[in-house]
Image 1 (cartoon, rainbow, N blue to C red):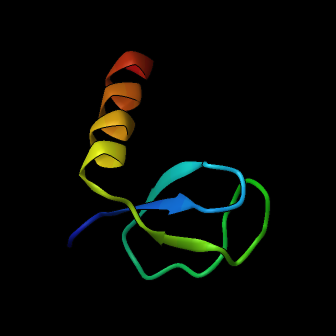
Image 2: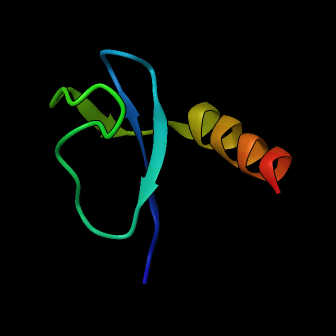
Length: 51
């Protein structure tokens, strides 16, 4: 099972999902894409800070 990190083009929210996703869980817009390397690093850093 692979986790994918997504970024919202509307609000900048970074989030992960195991399955395909087409809507931002933060703002609800359908302007999401797979995160780039810098965004993935930022997401992982935030996850470490939260645990």
